Length: 346
Image (cartoon, rainbow, N blue to C red; front, side, top):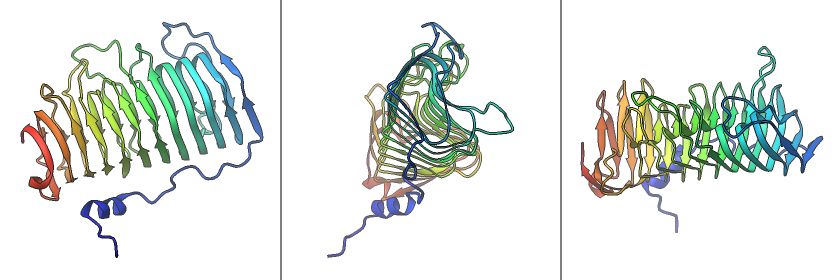
């Protein structure tokens, strides 16, 4: 018997992006860095990039089972164009940033391609785990866990993409506790788990987790983003979305503000033009005392938002809070047939 496809199945198949799931098959490494320790001079209360670098890498390099301790901006650093890099099964502690992509010569951008970061744990990170930029592409970051230090710098973020980085997949990556310190109470507090920027595209987040950040769990500006099976818990704005894309089976739990201006939300939408999002089976859980809106819409042009098979349990919260043009909401199936329990519509 032919399989009967629901609206949800058809949307998922149609909207999942057709680009590589992971990096291409890695070529054999010509340089192996294995079972080494890289120790810097970073004191426990350091700020900025103090502590020095660990390892500068080149093309066709495999870094495996190494330790990185007390370093500044780059336990592993890419500073020239680099192809075919793998970093795996490493540990890092007390660092400004573990993986840094910054050119030594501005005229020679450190474009990174066909790369994998996997099975890495970074703790005590003052600014973040990774920054990947320029025109870097065809990358996979999987089974990586990043933990903020508790004294994070301004604009801290667990995993960061910028420039024109594209075709990057995060799979089972985790970011925890990236909380800005030192901001005034009347300022907006930043601090994200995952971020990408305008100019990035073809970015996928699969089964990723972001918790306890002072701004977005996922603060995403890339075009055509795709998230599947991601969870955001205890961030100010669990999913902070700016451009366009699809979220499949993603879950938001208990958003919380730890200070600064701006209200918390489960899913918040921002920006000017091109905003169309499809949320397939969004799941929301909040206690009765949590009044953070499920959908906070602060766009400057009308948002088009399609909601498919929602499962929303937020008995103390409004379903929508709108500050700006009225959005167009498409319910698939009808609003009445979706599992939604909230305090009120607005």
